Structure formats: structure tokens, C-alpha cells
Amino acid sequence: MPELPEVETALRGIRPYVIGEPVAQVVVRDPRLRWPIPKALGAELPAQTIVRIIRRGKYLLLYGQTGCAILHLGMSGSLRIFPAKTAPEKHDHVDIVFTNGTLLRLRDPRRFGALLWTRGDPLAHPLLANLGPEPWDPAFNGAYLHQRARHRRLPVKSFVMDSRTVAGVGNIYANEALHLAGIHPARRAGRIAHRRYDALVEAIRTVLDAAIAQGGTTLRDFVDSAGRAGYFKQRLRVYHRAGKPCPSCHAPIRQRSIGQRTTFFCSSCQH
DNA sequence: CCGGACGCCTGTCGGC
DNA sequence: TGCCGACAGGCGTCCG
Image (cartoon, rainbow, N blue to C red; front, side, top):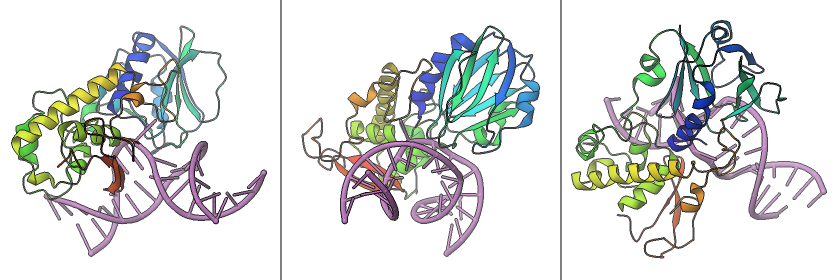
């Protein structure tokens, strides 16, 4: 599910409820996520206060005083704020209960998500150490992409979905940004001109900004911290729109698989 | 080093 | 109505 805009939506929703709140307890009903939830999380986080929350790519980092929780929502994860007495439902694997009578609840039906605990710098954790720049980082620009793509033969769509290239761009927004930039998703990354990479950087930022403004995209699972769906689905130009008219030229949107991921594009406007 | 394939897990949907 | 395969927003790991 969640790509950068959905994780950012989750962050903005939970932040006011979580920052500065002392943790009373951590309830782990099922530790079997992508990696087992470490015992240290439940042992150390209670009695601490969450002092800071940031997003890095698709990761959320919840900083306590002696360590940091690293959270990833995988394909189907979501975070909700509830009154502390609210009964859990199926797939509600973890609660972080605060002393003020609220809790932060992680639901993840497919359990591709992760919740880890580190005492060191979370940005140096192996899962985060090799992430590329954030999309709005000035270092993420056309020259950077053009340089990094040199001699690479993989499809540009796979190239931008590689988290080492840029953090946070998943399947939906890669499709959308490539359409906005007029670049065919199967084009070899090393055969795209510098100027077209300038356009792609702008397109990625535009699409992500717009999606965040709509509270993300809900295809099925995703809800924000208050349980509301995101509305960017209504603005999708190509994703899940096979056979429907291209918003630019009205030619039918095509669908094929690239890099084992479903890909949507307009063969008339994207080259 | 690079690019592609696989597998993790559960739920849903379409076709027969 | 029921069953069965295909597919789904991610990504670490393995293989050639």
C-alpha cells in the first residue's frame, strides 16, 4: 500500500497525538511481521517519551530518549489513533499505549511491514543507510538522475522505484510521474536525456505533493490515523486505468508488466 | 556490479 | 454457490 504520500499522511495524522506523550506500555499481539518485533521494543519504550517523529522514504522513525522505533507499513499497513480501551480487531498486531488514555495501533493484514528498535542512529541502520535522497532534496535533480543512470540498461520505471535512486517512489507514483513527464516506462534508464530527467524530477515532486494534499491514494486498505480514505485515487492519470482515455490525448491507457510490477502508460504521449 | 526472479502473507476478485 | 488461480501499494535476497 503505502508509498511516500500515504506514509506522510500517516505521520501528519499521528504526530499531534504522539509527540511528548509518555508511553505506558507496548502491547505486541503478534510479533511476526517481516522481521520479528524485537523484545527490546516492549522492554525499553515504556516509561519513555516519544520526542520526535520523522519520515525517511517510506519509513517512520519514532524517537524515544534511549532509542528509536523504525516502522515500515509494507503493502497493507496502517496506523490509527484510538482511545486506550478500544478493542483490537483482526490484524491489529501492535499497540503503543500512552499514559494520556490514547493508543497508536498498527494494523497490517499481510504482515510485510516492520517494527524494529535501535539504540543507535536509525539513519545508519542497514535498512535506511542506502536510501537515496528525499524527492525534495536539492541534491535530487536532473543532473543527479542522468549521472546515476549512465550505462544502466534497466527500465527507467525500475530505476526510479529503486529506493537507492530516490526514497519513497513506489508503483503508483512511478507510473503517474512518468506519464506527467512524457517518458515511456520501459525506456532504458541510460538512454534518457538530461533535460528529460529534469522534467521527471519535477513530475515526481508534483505528483507526490498533489497526493499528499489529497491524503494519499486508497485502493483498498489505506486509511489515515482517523480511519479516513485518501482521495488521490480520483486524480490518477494512468494507474489502474487500462483501456480508459489518456487525460492528455484520449488514447487508451495501456497495461503491461515491467520489473514484475503492473505498469500503466500512454503509448501516444510517452516515449 | 547489474538486472531479473523469487518469496514473504492475507484478502479479494474474476472466471469457470 | 464454490473453487482456484491470479493479483495486490514493498523490498531483501539470491542467482546467473
